[in-house]
Image (cartoon, rainbow, N blue to C red; front, side):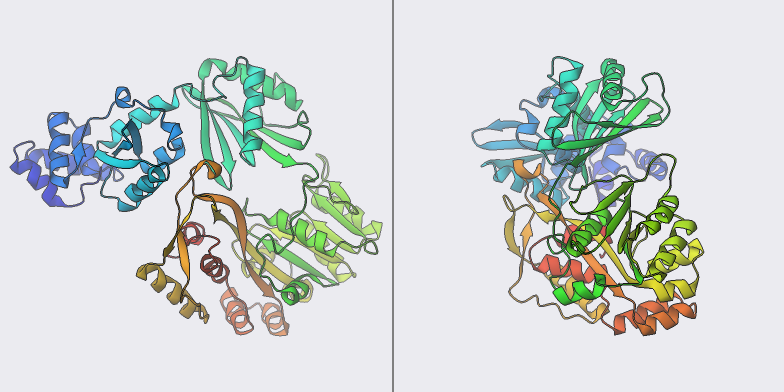
Length: 541
C-alpha cells in the first residue's frame, strides 16, 4: 500500500504504534527494496501488531481496512474480473452482497486503478465497496487463487484432453501464441492475445513431464532430447501450429504459434496504413529498388508485407517470396520456405535465376543477404523485406552497420516504412468521454513538435472498461500506426555524403515525413485507440 507522505510515519509514531527507530529500520530496508512501500515494509518487519497497523493506516487514509486472507474470498473471482486484472491492479473482489461487491486493494490512493475496477464492476451492475490491505497479503491470495482448479483446462480428465482444451480455448480467444512455462512449483500456461500475455492456468508440477511428453509426440519432436527443438502440430483442420521448445531451469518450455491456414489477407488500409491511394502507390509501385518495413519483433512487419504483396499481385507479374516460415499461403505466388540447411542469402541467389519481377525476402539479417537484395534491386527487380530497428530513418543506419555502402543505399532504397501495433478500443464495453485538459496539452505539444495542427474540437475519447469479449482488457484486436520515409533526391544526396540520421530526419520533415506518433495521435482522435495505449508503445508522456 502507498504511504505517500512522511507525516504518515509520524502519525503512526504519535499513535504509539511504532517508534522513530522503527521508521529508520523501514527506511534502511527501503534502500535495498526501493519498489516496496512504507506500510508494507512495516508489516514485513513485524514492528507491531499487523491488525492494529492496518486499522491505523485505514483510519489515516479514511478507508476500511482488513488483513485479507484466502479464506475471506467467498466468490469465484474470475466470474467478475480476470486474474490478469487482479494481478495488474493488486485488487481482489472477495464478497458480493445485495448488489454490492467488496474489493480489497493494496493502494487505494491510486485513483486510476480504483476507478478502473469500479467501472469494470459497475458494468456488471455492481456497486464497489473498497478496502485496503498489505500488498504481501494480496500476493498471497493471488497465489492461492491461481492454484485452484477453476476452469475447463484444469478440469480436463487426462493429459490429451487438457492440451486439446488449451489449444481450442486459445483459438476461441484469438490467441496468437500459447506458452507452457515450467515454474518452480507449477506449470504455467499463458496466452498472448492482441500482444498481451494472459495467464489461463497453473497445472500441478506432477503433470509437467506428461504434458511435455504429449507436446513432443504431437509436434513430431524427439522425446529423449532436452535441447531446443522445433516442430509442428497438424491436428487442427484450420491451423498450422509451429512449436518451439527450450530448456529452462525448471524444465522444458514450449511456445505454440497459432497460424490460421488460408486466412484472408487484410488490405493495407485495414491494417491501419493512411487511407491515401496516392501515398500507397508512391510507397510501393517501384522497379529497380527495395522497400523495407522496419519494427521491433512482434509488431506486424510480415503481415504488412503480405498485404502489400496481395495488393501488387497480378497474373502478369511473377512474384516469389522467401520466408521463414511461410505463414499465409497466397494464390498466384511462388512461396519458398527457408529450410534447416539453407539461408535467406542462398535462397535469394537461386530465386534470381527464376525470372522474378517482385521478390519478398522475409528478413534482412546480415550483410550477405543485404548485398544480394541490393543487387536484385539494381538488376530490375523490386524487392520487399524487413529489418529489426526502431524507425524508418534508422533503417539507413542499420544497413550501414551491416556493411552496405552509402552508394548502394542511396541508389536502391526507395521507401522505408516503420510501424507499431496498438490495441483497438473494445467496441462492446468502452464508454465515451471528453479529453482531459492534460491530454489536450499533450496532443497540442506533439502537434507543435512536428508542425501538425490536430483538430481536437468536438473530439472525444473512450474510458477503457473491459468485458468478456475482450478478456476484461478493454481492448479488442490491434491496428498499425505507420511512418513512411520516401527517399527523394535530397535524402539520396545526404546518404551518399554519409550524413547523420539527424540531418536526414531534418530533410525528411521538410518533404512531409511524419513520425509514428503523428499517425498514432490521429488514430486516438478517430476513437480507434487511446492515448494511454499509445504511450505504452511510444512513451510520449
